[in-house]
Length: 131
Length: 304
Image (cartoon, rainbow over all chains, first blue to last red):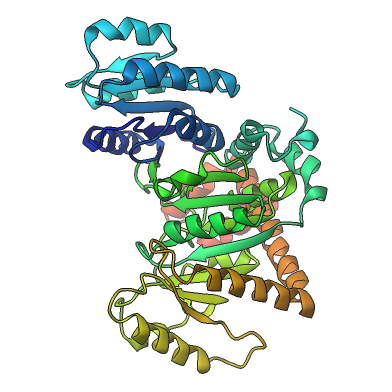
């Protein structure tokens, strides 16, 4: 039987622009994945609780507000606290080059900035989920 | 993982057990072996209705009403899987954000994964797991349904049929199928024009049904305006009490377990057949019309 990769696509924090998240959600769907879309304005707690209950293989967040250095490490810490550090954590959105290393040091396995083809994100997820 | 010791607060373990049964991975039968004796205390509510009727919003507000009565609520929300790629967008959580961090709630989204009838093949198994680990109420939200997706009736103790005004004339309400399975009808978005007319049409349809001891109530509600919700909860409780008094609940669950048994048997049979050496050959012969479908099935069946 096929066992689809399950991905949570979420938008942490306070920006209301979810076009990018929706495009990614759709692309992952078309790549044969089950995408749990949680909608706008999620707290890190909501995202991590949903990831745990849904038992996803990957958490993919989209963030355009500039609050990534605060919110993404928090999500990472909550994943660790929730015995869920094995879940692949990736991010996309308007994230300056200078911040990427900091995020990677805080559990974000990949950062996809504007212009990244969806195939790159899809391949990264396929190759890096632990199954 | 010691399955027997998993309780309602072990959300990570519950999530993993559901994945095991959903993917039918090695060892998933042991989950049932450990948990089955603990099932039977949860009350299972099926919520069904056409796409956009407000099933998720209603699920959200009903769940909130149950947790305010100090109940543990499990939610299984099903959305369709693409028949071409196997992918899906599971978006029911969008309407349930407030619930996701509540310790009394566990929400799981499922893709229908090729199953017809508005459910996923693992729905029953997920219900059993949530029941065993401490859910008091389990809500199953089906995919948006059309006219004949009646599978939910085999998995729930009460069926809430959610409708909205303006979807069709009274002949729609007369058709066989989905309209026959509702134990409680909710006309959601009751602030829209035509809500009363829809209510009257459904009531008229119900009065033509063969006399049964339970007459489904038809209620007006608005999930987003939080109107009429207490009445829905009361109706659910009346239906439960009614079924318990009459011994109907026992009968219904026996029938549902029979369904589960046959689903498992069917699945096992399919797997066995697919493993047969002759299977590709017989399929080839069938395609070339050198053998008819019944003969092909008989030939494979005898080899098991």
